Amino acid sequence: MSDSAKRSQAYTSAGVDIEAGNEFVRRIKDMVKSTFTPGVATDIGGFGGLFKPEIAGMEAPMLVAGTDGVGTKLKLAFMFDKHDTVGIDLVAMSVNDVLVQGATPLFFLDYFATGKLEPGVAAQVVSGVCEGCRQSACALLGGETAEMPGFYPDGEYDLSGFAVGMVDTPKLVTGKEITPGDVLIGLASSGVHSNGWSLVRKLLAQSGLDHDDTFPGTDRTVAEVLIEPTRIYVKPVLELMESMTIKGMVHVTGGGFYDNIPRVLPETVAASINFGSWAMLPVFDWIKAQGDLSWPEMLQIFNCSIGYILIVDPAHADEALEKLDAREDVEAYRIGEIVKRQEAAEQVEVVFP
Image (cartoon, rainbow, N blue to C red; front, side):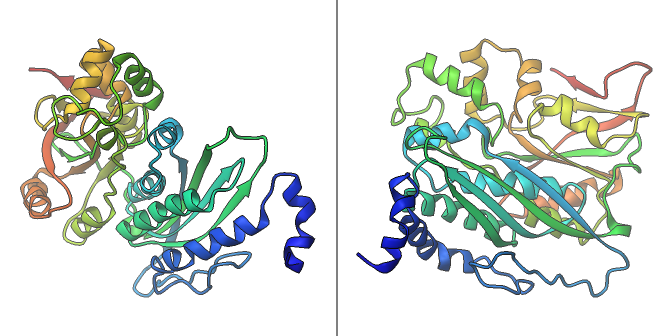
């Protein structure tokens, strides 16, 4: 037995395996380095991560921070024994949030907690975090791995993380300039993303579908459709912002259309959504049918195939759609417009055919 193992034997007997932690760090070191951007000023393993942002050409740099988790979608990772995609979800939920205000994500930090550390599983999770960071061109600057015996059921873990981005204050997207006539452009989601999973898991259990069954309306398995990671919108949106002004943006998360869109609207306006103006993914048709839900109920809970919304001047709408349609990483739809808000009316009106 090595001297290190002897020194940590008492802690190991209590359920915390220091050597497993060291093995985990060895496994992820190269993955984490693959996310490093020019601003990273430290290596993995320090007490704090250092980042030196490039502020040349900015009038008044402002930091924008966001934090989130993956929620009960993690239960699918445990159920399907697939752990390499939930890390993408983790990054997506935070970087998409800071993007709403026009910020470029700079770096991300994660927190992984489990009852017994399995280095292989943990490394799969971090591989997803690294992939999410690469998709959003931000660095995985640091993180925390907590082994907490007796706190979590065997084989389970929890995840949280946060992102820090930066925007030049004059280019901050606030929604204050949104006026009637502005156009809403919806960017397609990849699936359910990371909200509403308590209901989805209930419906899955009632359906009798197994993970390797073909999901209704698709040629993919149940596991493939349901665990599809959250789409990251950073690159297409930031590229579009280089050529035009975006007045407002919405990350469609928990609360769906009805709760998220009003967060960026002035009190004097409302959003009129033309239901059916975008392609609906089969997973949402299945959820609606399996749960005997109405479309208004669905739009209150889920993204219903629109994961992100841009609000632009009508003069820029066609150009924005053309530029987005030219990309391979996102599908865009003209889904509605901004109208004058009637007294005491809701700020989101969905018009059904």
